[in-house]
Image (cartoon, rainbow, N blue to C red; front, side):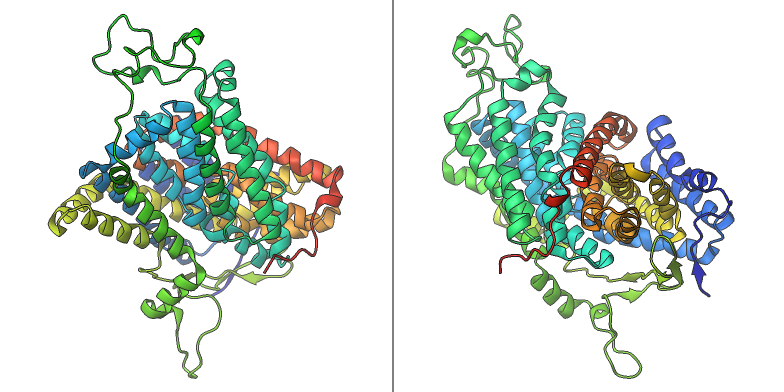
Length: 591
């Protein structure tokens, strides 16, 4: 049995598009409108996608069921396992008392909440995105910010907004690799073009983050720090993406930004220390002024009774601070190693049989690794105009139990717990408590991936994407939102590039627009959809213990996502019609 996707079964593209959007409408209506629990939302959305795919687009039932199962299996190993392991490490750090010391050390750099958001959500989150990606930065940085004293809603929402500019090079450049593979364009040109779009947003997002928290006056009070964070990250991102490689763009930019910012904060302090109203320390005098209302004539220092006596961080010896940070240092090292292609390949070849399958004729099976997923692999083909000619959709599942990023996080947690003096029994008890607390979140994440895979293999995503191609000369703007849609549907910039990379090239060539620009725009626009995809929101609520508040967070970040996506779209429009000579061609990375 073989099935070729159909993109206009109802004979009117607008009607087919409306029907194809039903699963997404159902999902977000239940999630944001009716506040149904996320795992039920995902199940309802997936069932809607299956019904639409089977009844309207004529997808065979066995293929639809197999696609859903494939998505659930993929989500459990590739995504949910990362979140569980990251929260486990956080729980170990809390249980051993080290997180309290970490919190004080960050407060020692700056007690100002605006600056803490820049350091943790933007800089540290970008490092984790570059090393691991796939939800890890939102989970880890979100838990970290709660430990610092942020309320769960603020921790979740701010991390979702922060996890944008770095996403295009997440997980050691995986999205760019996928984009080059499906589009057939040079990876160096694509990385360079993305590196000429997203640095503008890397400057904007830190400002956007702070302004989300406070008013304009309070934002301008820390404008020097915002400029340092944004420009140090953006300049490094541009240089690395254009002249070095596409693997370590985020890691290099994040490290440079962290170092430069910490040095800058040793010589510059905001005129006032801003903290949330709920940060008023327990035991503070009733008559004391609110913590964020500090007179300018105080010389930039808090009155002793309001700050030094109540919220000033404790001082710890350097060795104690280093010990407290050890779990996250080990985590960073593990996720970096786990992301290196040579290390990952070595582990896979040693532990995962799917990476070397010998066929009946004695030859090793060619192509990407993994077992052929039953009733799905190469049995469904995309057709024109999404691809130049009918192309089978692969579905191989590699049970890379050791090289999965979640396994690296889990081993980092185990090693950290042992080094901090926890017994194996205590580690097992802590893991069980983490697992029980995260069980519904893991189900929700896996089912969200099931929905995404049904949408992909039924061709509903392509139908929605084709609607964007009817925008004529405005295509550079709306083509950017095609990438946004891909990430909003799948939860992954890598998946969005795999889905729409070929379509972007075909359409841009037909319209006379540079395909390097539009394929890069797919990835750059996609990063702004990261904050509204159901998977990321579920990860954020899981890591910050807010399961059930997904709808509230979605409503909060949605317009931020649209506005930032529009900014990227305008930048792409400028490259398309005003500065086309800045689109790179024939670049080579420094060896």
